[in-house]
Image (cartoon, rainbow, N blue to C red):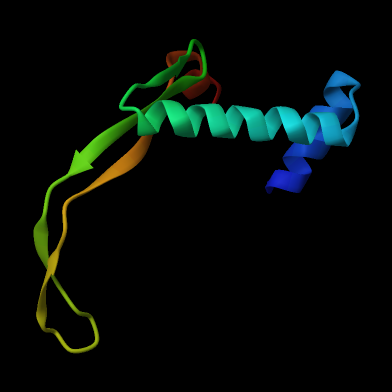
Length: 89
């Protein structure tokens, strides 16, 4: 499912227009992004938790040449499914 299909589904299920559903989804995405960027986490009970974790610097290999390269440390977004979501899958 892509974003357009999700917006359409939200619109149909909630009885709001597609533009309103798109605005709501964009607001959700922006809010989660800003919260993660500030170092906090977002917990949706029954669904899951969005958080940020740090990936340490490491060495890797270029698959074309086999040369060793250094991969910089960075922050990555994580999602952990909640107990209820995991049970439904």
